[in-house]
Image 1 (tube, helix red, strand yellow):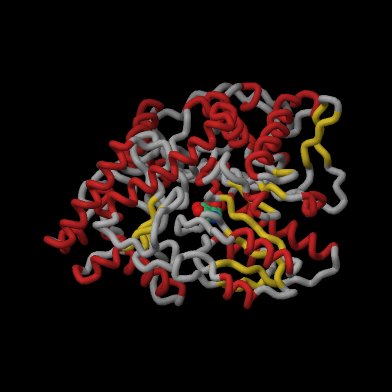
Image 2: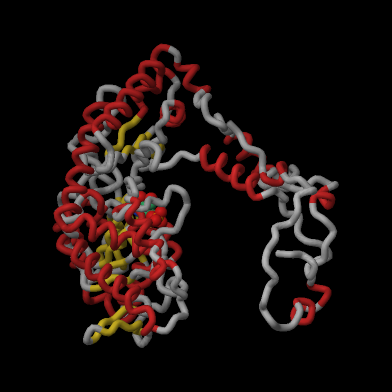
Amino acid sequence: MSEPLSFELSRPAVDPPRLPEAEVAGPAPADVLGREMLRARPPGLPRLSEPEIMRHYSRLASLNYSISENFYPLGSCTMKYNPVVNEAAAALSGFADLHPYQDEDSVQGALELMWRLERALCAIVGVERVTLQPAAGAHGEWTALRMIAAFHHSREENRTEVLVPDSAHGTNPASAALSGFHVIEVRSGDDGRISLADLESKLSPRTAALMLTNPNTLGLFEREILDIAEMVHATGAMLYYDGANLNAFMGICRPGDMGFDAVHMNLHKTFTTPHGGGGPGAGPVGVKSELVPFLPAPTVERTNGHLRLDFKRPQSIGRVRSFYGNFGMLVRAYTYILAMGGDGLSQASQDAVLSANYLRKLVEGDLDMPHEGPCMHEFVASAQNLHEEGVRALDIAKALLDRDFYAPTVYFPLVVPEAIMVEPTETESKATLDAFAGAIKEIVAKAKSDPQSLHEEPTKLPVGRLDEVSAARRINAYLQGLSEDPVLRWKAPAEAPETAPQQTLQESPC
Ligand SMILES: Cc1ncc(COP(=O)(O)O)c(C=O)c1O
């Protein structure tokens, strides 16, 4: 169940890889860099034969948990199945082999895809234009706030505050703070929705924007959204939509029609290719006409069927990402949108909401439900009912791992104690949802009969419970200069030089 590091598997006797001679003419590295800059010997990289390295990575891959193998009900992250056709489209050589410095005339197809994706996203969220540059949701939030700041600045208004509900995703206040705004928290009411009275008391001529996600992170639709938009606009502020929860109503209603002025979308959630594995994401931002002049440059423009990049945008906030964004993600999202069509997208949202409500109903006798249903595409339960048994949300999450399920999001949103946030998505079958609810039922029964045993789970995985308390204490002690640095990476043993042959850079084949 475990795999040594490639450094530990390394065999000094293995021959270096046979690579073809570099056929690049030009000066020797020493002439360019100076001899003193060259390594005396190659880096101590592990030495393994090709089959050994292949098996090492295959074994590591088999330890991974992924959406391709099993259920991943990670609330707020929309871990939906990623259709293989997306990957096939992104791998087409006409897309995958492009170079970002290619001449515009030679990349008309790629620009056309970006242009068409922008049109599709505009239609889905109800905005005028979209920038495809931001690389993730949080980056989209920051980009939109930069545009909002530039908009207020252009009107010579000094607006320094951004309002954020207490149920918001942590990236919202972080993006606002990074953009130089003061973050003002708006309280939720007892029903889990934003308190209009508290909002009213915090709106002022200093307010630049209210950041909101709808449905909110409790999976509840903000029914008063039109009133909220009116209140925000009446003070001259803008309404920002955190589109991470767009999966709840694609093709059914649109943030633009609800009064939102700027919207980010997590292509890597709503439009498949979830980013749980840490892969690249894309967080395009859509804006209404007032914000269009401030969009990052370049934008993709189409004149008489010819596509070009427009860099001449005098009020633009500038480029927010090298080149044109994570292009491969744009191809995947566009493929998904085309494959689904408008009806398919709205069906996906309806199924996502149905799945969440079905699952919520199945587990509501086992866990607390702090807010009345029905929910949208996700729900937040609480393990507070197991407090007397000493069982916490973390124990439930760990126990699920032993039952072949990925753990839901826990301890978020912060407004719910012992929160367990479940987002089943539309791509799971009834049988999977039933099995998940069955596992929760069994864990809760165990919590009542033998709570201690739950503290020891997971027992079937390569790594059990991590000692987070000791880790935090050790890092603290290290930061205060009271202990040696924690072991966070592999370090060569003192005799390491033997693992690499004595070669100079010039002699090294790679
Ligand atoms: C509600 C919400 N907003 C914003 C984000 C940030 O998105 P990203 O992780 O792509 O930066 C997330 C991510 O989980 C989210 O759930």
